[in-house]
Length: 303
Image (tube, rainbow, N blue to C red; front, side, top):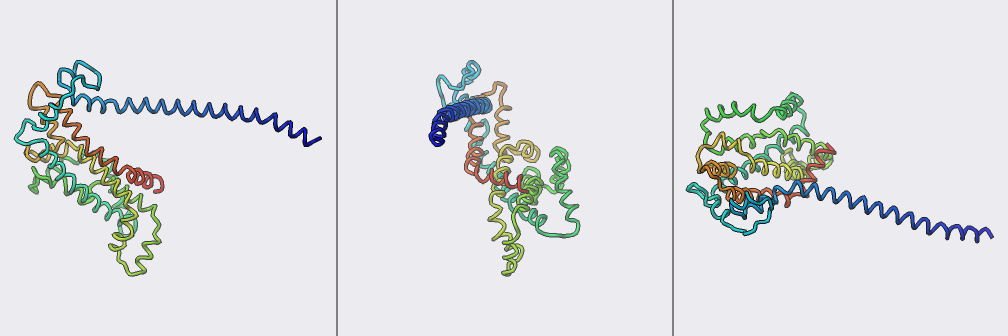
């Protein structure tokens, strides 16, 4: 008799449980739909200027100011053709090569120097270590504008003006304190067991760094290189101060040069070259996105 009653109760409760579960599932789906719709709307609002710039690069100047739509009515490549020629004796490809001549040595120098300095701070004890590290971190609080005049006077006295050396050398000497701090934080999250085992096997400090630590630091080093690549690609003030020859201009100054040439700006040409300038940074970011996120999260959370 008891078993029959319990069976009847169970069978009566099953429809109620299933109805409650369906209601919970509907609420969860509705909540997820609202969240994703809100995120999609905010994302579209943030990306729309970039989408409009890409669309406007295929418009004429007249159409660009007559229609707010990003889709051109009569698409044309004339902005890319004329913009690539520029108003100088050099094509825009020449300025791209100048940017690469600045970026590649700067990225390599930053990765090598910051790794060496961060390894020294994270793994060795020496007199004045805390004072030196505090000094390095204190430079993060200084705006770059504060150091521009002393650096300019120094490079002028050395005779490095109108060359790429003022843009290369500080990075090759670990002049970017943010990257040093970032790699130090990442190193503090790495156990020392493998390094101690390598030293027991006879490896010196440099061999331990190259063969043991650097492979473990790959996400942080890739993040450093990616940050430096994008910052250097977008840098305008540095080349403007130290470079005076149009022949050595990077793309950031070449775009400004296009604006200064005439009173009536050819905005379709400027936007077309801006799109081409964005492509390398976006490509590198999406190719290294996995390692970039891993390097940022590990260095920021575990450190």
